[in-house]
Image (cartoon, rainbow, N blue to C red; front, side):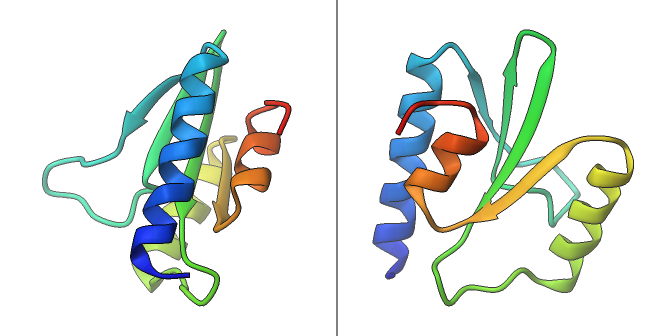
Length: 93
């Protein structure tokens, strides 16, 4: 999947999430790197998604951040699939 298709999957999941009542926040913390692309918030639930192409791999700093978030009890997904992203957010595909 090209970078454009990766962004297309990301856009579709974010639009569906917002329609389903999720707050979708693009992650871009100043001075930090490696956090997942989006944080989704809804009714006390926080979930993170890192969007990748099917051949894309997470970097060592991304692996560290994902592990750090999971150790704190957060749900994190790395996906290249619109279907998987929606299921992760309990949205009917």
